[in-house]
Image (tube, rainbow, N blue to C red):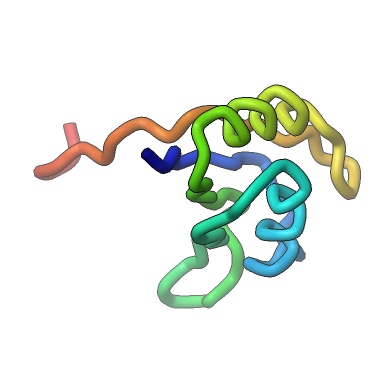
Amino acid sequence: MSKNIYVGNLPFSTSNDDLNGLFAEFGEVISAKVIRDKFTDRSRGFGFVEMENDEEADKAIAALNEKEIDGRALKIDEAKPRRTGGRD
């Protein structure tokens, strides 16, 4: 079963390929996506990575959480399922 990982506090210059490379050191990455603003196409400073293997994903989370990249400490955790419906 694959694991979806939230990656926050990304440098705004981070690309999908950069994000993929960061996690590929720990195992097989299914997808890596930096979330971009739909109007300006600028990074919103966070993204999601899906990894094939739960154990490898857990190792990546442990190793990369709080890792500093371009002066920003990453915030990494298992992604929570998306809520449906409107805003609260």
